[in-house]
View 1 (spheres, rainbow, N blue to C red):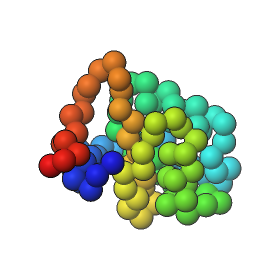
View 2: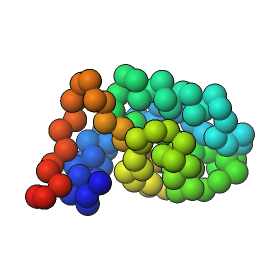
View 3: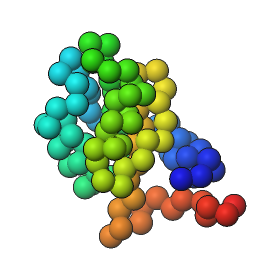
Amino acid sequence: MTAKQRSHLRSLAHQLKPILHIGKEGITDTAARAVEDAFNTRELLKVKVREAAPMSAAATGEALAARISDAHLVQTIGRTVVLYRADPEKTGIRLPKATD
């Protein structure tokens, strides 16, 4: 993912509200399934990492992106993580070309 594509996704994510909260249990199987289910209905989502979480927000975002197939960590701001996964069936978000 290029810097321009990441910047485009950050601008789209600005208006989103977090749909999932990671707490003191960290990334459980249930939390990973919830993120996977959320990606079934949307391509871009925000996840809030609580202070009690065992990992930092950046580490949590990287772990979620690694655990979920084709997911990309777009941004970490404070305790909020933005993740993106393209939906091959519906192209709701059009990314700028990689050569732009």
